[in-house]
Length: 112
Image (cartoon, rainbow, N blue to C red):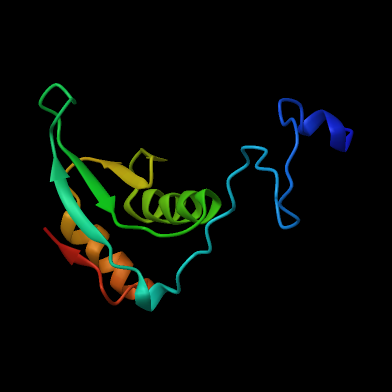
């Protein structure tokens, strides 16, 4: 797309350091495994009483979150999803998720 089309709506700026914000968010850098503060929760809220294991606290890109989600789902053998910065695993699997995270090098992971 042409550069001028991205700036529609901006009339004029006298600031020589002005950077036009086109609304694209910068990609978040993924923290190393040793610095991730992951918390593993048991949750039934909004699931018609069914139990789910939720991993919260992941800091990084959506692609890395999805990769960790796939790893957990494959090793446990259940379904789940990765959205809104958290991983949802079907069933009561807190202990197994925590063991997998520690084996993968996430040293600050803990069960809540």
